[in-house]
Image (cartoon, rainbow, N blue to C red; front, side, top):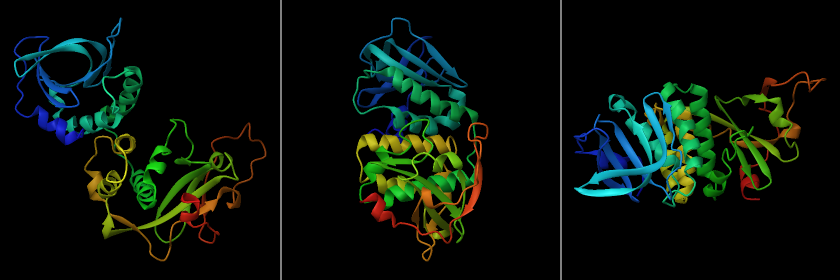
Amino acid sequence: MRDPATLRSAFHGLTPAAEPGSFVGSVAVDNIICARGNGGDYELFVPAASADDDPAVLRIGSMRLHSPRIYEVDVLNEKRVGPFLRLSLASERFDLLDAFLASFCACVPDSLPLAEPRSLSEQLAEILQLLQGDRVPTAGEIKGLWAELWLIMSSVDPGQLLRGWHSHPHDKVDFAVRSVLLEVKCHEGRERLHHLRLDQLQLRPDATYIVSVCVAASPSGSTIRELVSGIEARVTDVERARMARQVALVLGVETQLASEYRFEPWPDVPPIAVPAAAIPRPMVTDVLAVRDVEFVVDLSGAAGVPLADILEG
């Protein structure tokens, strides 16, 4: 199975290559090679369908992303030669290795060799930028991620939600499922107090719902990692990769946070879906001049729709 633990184990026992420009590695899975270069850097080689005529290198701090070219890697004294996309992590940033491998697994498609490495490069670059920045997610981002994963886990068809989870980089809502748009809002407490953006309510008022989730920190609750594990058993490899990518985008290098926080919904304040058209909002008279309006709304008295009616209807 292609996962960070499998790739990490392939690095075990590898020593840096003796000669500059050479690589010593082992095959991890799906002909992906984990290797060490002469400087000790951690190298991942992904089979590509062809080499670029004009190969380029994208440098992101301690990481480098090389477009496909012909490489030779020594694997158990056997030379592996071919077009590979190469991803490198500087040896001194060993602290980033787990997040680096998780990001890689989140992006690499099931089908190899790579037919469209440029698309993979763009996805990896997006995540690696976040890793390099060492950005720490806020408490609100962690709770928001938990609530979105909880919604996926609670669905009878988690794969359907995963396929529509931030399916476009410029999406203004969390999920696009069939003809319905869902924006998940999470509040730690019993009141349905949520931060909203006016443009989210104006997308398609007749088909947009705000999913209100009220949670409590609880030792009997679930962690992000536990939710992910539960979902993984019910979805395809492609859907697992999509989920891993979204988790990596939020947590970045702070992967331990996936196990540190436990939440559960308040039993007497069940999650509900509130139609966008029914939500009070500030009045804006000039929508061209006034933009990016954010406000706090109390949905405690709102008439919501049961989530099952939205997700299974």
